[in-house]
Length: 172
Image (tube, rainbow, N blue to C red; front, side, top):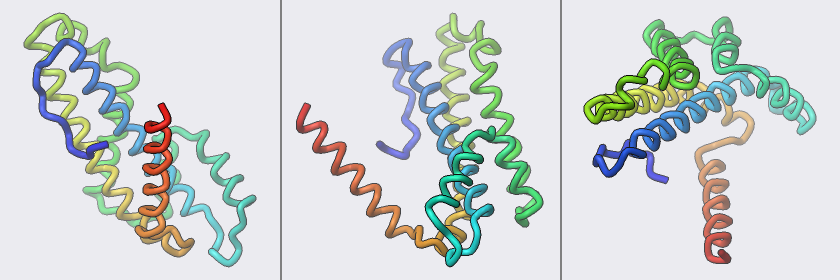
């Protein structure tokens, strides 16, 4: 999957919903970054780590909302005021997107010009989610390295996923 935000090509009415789906996808990526951060902040030192401890922390934290995950990290980290503000904005955008977006854009949905505005706005939202994700990744990635989760480790696991997907596609 490409990490680039697609251009609007006005192919069809469903393009609006495709952009919404992509924005929802990036909202989930962002939420998972908040989860990655919350987990690593709650882990014991690497020498005390066990699968059971990890599973318990993971199980507890996956029940939390994006807002709760962000809030749980506030007292622990020194995040710049600008980054904290940006993450708060991303949280608000995520909540609007998931809970209110189409209701607030009802008139735009029945208008060609309105759907164009929606697609442009969704591109902007995607861009903001991606930037917020980079902020969180910049915080948690160095912390995870203590537990052996390095760029190389992640790349190896992504390659395993790609190989499995390719095998599945070839078998279809």
